[in-house]
Image 1: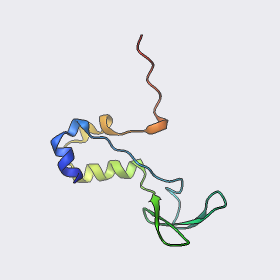
Image 2: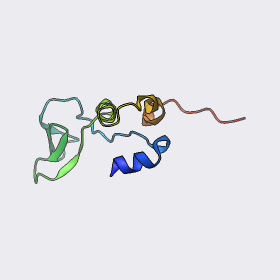
Image 3: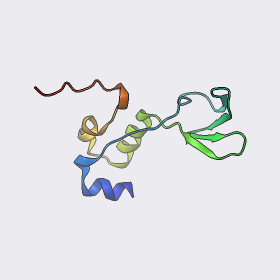
Image 4: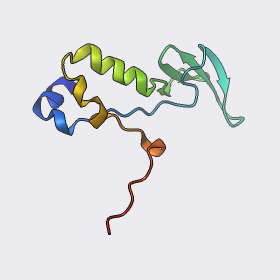
Length: 95
């Protein structure tokens, strides 16, 4: 489980989200690219046509809050383990 992996090497942990574009939207059905419609139910995204899971809408702040709830006392690690993906400025190359 995540707790075992984190306990073994907390400095190697990283929080990442793959939230779809509907994160933060109210529950309901949404069209995307004129293709299949997606249904958002809480933090879950499903295809309207067949009910299959199509993704997650758990945003990064939810990941951080979940970490804080489940690992009290290690909030000092948050700046090191939160991953901003493409939103993080690139690191300049070393000379």
